[in-house]
Image (tube, rainbow, N blue to C red; front, side):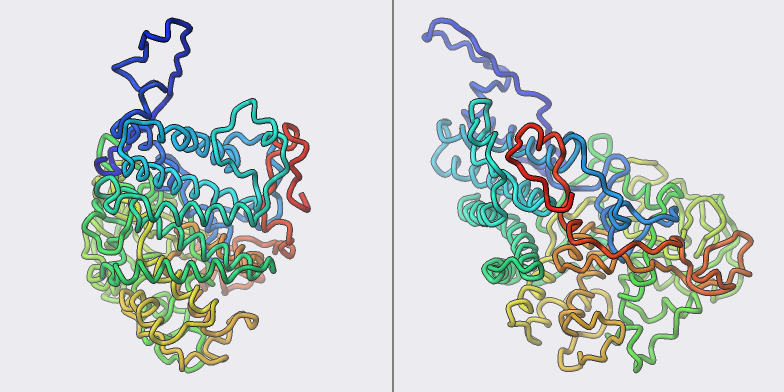
Length: 594
């Protein structure tokens, strides 16, 4: 199979049923029917291409993974004065499963099981049959992982479900134990039977399956540990072993963090295991256009900004950190910080010109302090550069920009711009930068966290994981001996100081990638998301527009949402099953509390 960029989605599969002489072969020879689609390697490959669409990638419209991070504590909707429904506990039970994870995942599982049930009778060799079985198991595990993450125990389907399978159709939900163990089983089998090179460059191979297994095993192991379900070490040890195998094979990262998310071709980028490739006039997305538009007011919270260390490796809240110059001065706050901070949010600047394609310098060097710094980090055009522009090259004259509508704007003072590039120069909503789906940066974090959770994290582990990520951000290495109880006075006192720093690194490295909400859920720390969300420190007198400040003070931290959510309820850690499923099968019980 050629690159992931040429994936073809099968729109429909027509099954022809004829009643005629058994000696007549009436199966179509020039199209993929049920009689032919699973007969040869190429036909099965074409059918399986559609499975890649199950993997989350940059959107073709407006919804993407970063939206889930708005349900956490490190990002917020800068255009809203109310909490997200999940944080504000305003979720309703869906009336039907259409469009929900429940409906979508089971539809995908059916497609996969159709293939798994039929390939054994194909004309392929034993090795080819095994390969496609492994690919099918990988994608089935991926879909059941989504279901388990969202709902807990669900109905496990080993085969294609038909109307005659009344025992399954009317059965109670399977336990979380059964579903989790079956996902583990499927992925371990897949690793052993998928062809070493997959089906060509940038396709599912054993290492991609290992990456999914490591991701799943860490999630399930920590969920079990912090939700008191038991048997967590089994999954955590799998996460340790699987991530170690990948680190042994891929010990290094590409040195430029921005290139991991804004490259036009991730093929040459070291440490990327699988990605979605985009091609002009074939498959494009809207992530960069939206990030650079007033239509998208995704902001990083005060807490999110404070996660970024200074270059000496200390938190900004550490009382001995002389390198941090405070957050009351826009420029001082961004100085000597982890390079990834400038990749996440545009640093402060000012130029003459606002809303047009032209600009001139103010003549004050301080106004352009970060221009050469960002240029050195990203390499400049077509990657991030200053001044900030939207897709049509119109310039934002000043950052932070609270009160000028075009071309980009922020609500709380820290606009999120992780996806920003000019590969499809001056063209709207047809972005071309590739999307990393599995990458070693995540695997390093999985290994570090899992090793801590099983009591085996030490300086050697830190050096091959956390410190390689920090090196890419220009930050001093983690030295475990220095991380005492007062290393970060704002630390959650219920979390070990070293584990808190491991979690900090995950928050920084994967910000805006849609994992924070699920991290808080698996750690049972969603109470973080119900804290007051603050933004940048400002003086109201500096702005003509009224900007909400904490406590209605004349200066202070921006607070867009005046009402603080109630304490996060336990039953919200799992989402409600769609109501129509309970009607169709009265033996399926709703999640407790809904």
